[in-house]
Amino acid sequence: MKVAFELPPAQAEKLQMEAERLGLSPSDLARATVSDLLATPDAEFHALAERIIEKNRELYRRLA
Image 1 (cartoon, rainbow, N blue to C red):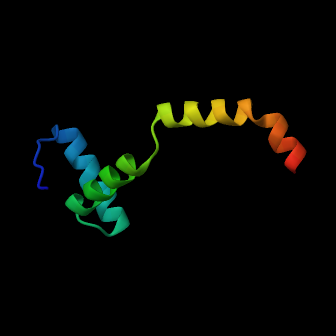
Image 2 (spheres, rainbow, N blue to C red):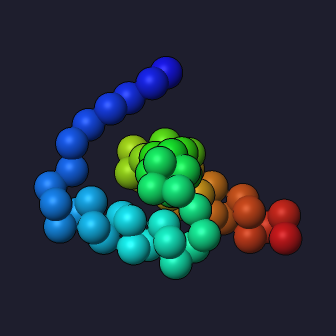
């Protein structure tokens, strides 16, 4: 999928500077950042995992 959007000048400058610092093109840095964001489990996942852990805490303690 190809995506195009405009950044405000201050953000574009910051993206350019960070990309240069990392030795990347601005588009590669933006692509990597979006990939990381989409790969991160969301808050709902974390809340569900916490409920499951809490619900089974005693079982996990006995099995340890």
